[in-house]
Length: 198
Image (cartoon, rainbow, N blue to C red; front, side, top):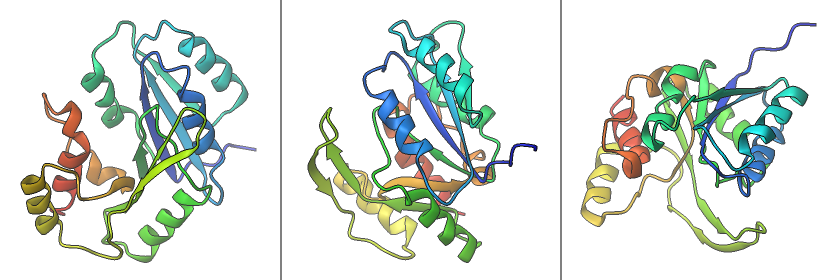
C-alpha cells in the first residue's frame, strides 16, 4: 500500500540539540487527525543528533532527514525549508520547541480548509523547562482574522513579535518569501509581515 502524501510538512532545522530535539519530534509525530511529513535539516551535528536522526528515519517513514556536509550557519540551514518542504501546508518548528496539544495541527488545518483565503494560523506561547513543565504563558489576545499591517506597526513600535507563533502556513505562500540575509532572529516576524500582505 503506497504511503499517503502528507497534508503538512513540519520542518525542523537542527544543530547539536540532542537534549531537546527528541521532545520536538515527539510532539510532531504524535499529532492526531492529520497526515504529516517531518523534514529535518541537520547542520552537520557532532553531538549524537545525526545518529539519533538516522535511527528515527529508519523506523518512521514520515521522517526525511537532510544532512549538510558542513555547518552552513543557522540562517542558511533555516532557509533549507524553501527547498525541502513539499506538502500544501507547512510549519517551521525550532528544535528546542514543541507543540503543546496533540490536535494543534488538525485545528489549524481545519481553519485553512474552512477559510481558503487564510494564509497562516497562529497560536499562543508556553515557556517550559527541560522537563516540559510550564513556567509561563504568553497570550497574544487575538482570535479570528486581524489586520496584519496594524500588527506589524505595533510590532515595530514595541520591538516585540505581536503576531503570535506561526502554527501553519500555506507552503506556496511561504516559499514566496525566503528569509533574507541577516534576518536570523527576526525570521518569524519577517515571514508574518510578508505573508500578511497576501
